[in-house]
Image (cartoon, rainbow, N blue to C red; front, side, top):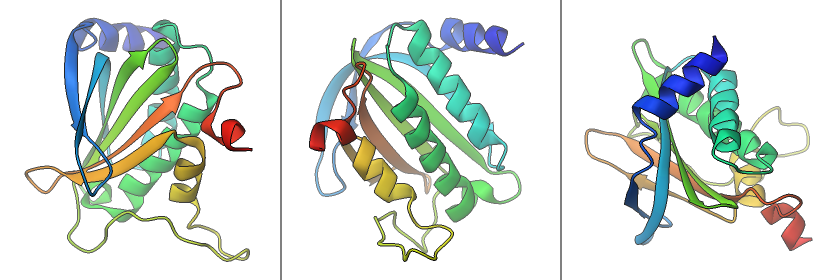
Length: 175
């Protein structure tokens, strides 16, 4: 069933069209050209984290990306944050994950949530005894670039640009 879901996602929304992604760090915007692969819309519940992680990994592998482990980790963190800290996690909420291939070794992921006026995503310095608070630190560590932007209709987008080249994670490159 899962492979059928991936094939359906690639067929229905992964039309392979070129398009520009408006993005940039929260302080600015840039335009990135890429090959749109999939849009995955999930209910804003905890079990959607594993579904998003698996779907994104499968979509990228089908598209020829070699190493998607770091991307899976970042997707897990971003979807967890959307479900835990935004209106996406409320009754009837949704979280959307968009997957784009910038080139054969670079993926661009957007996690779109239902927003909140209360908080803005930022990296925290969690204490060693804290059970949470490391998600965006992991995103910053593993993503080549990442950022946040607000969209219309109260939606917020957290995006990450990730290397999918074998052994070339941003984390390894910084070491």
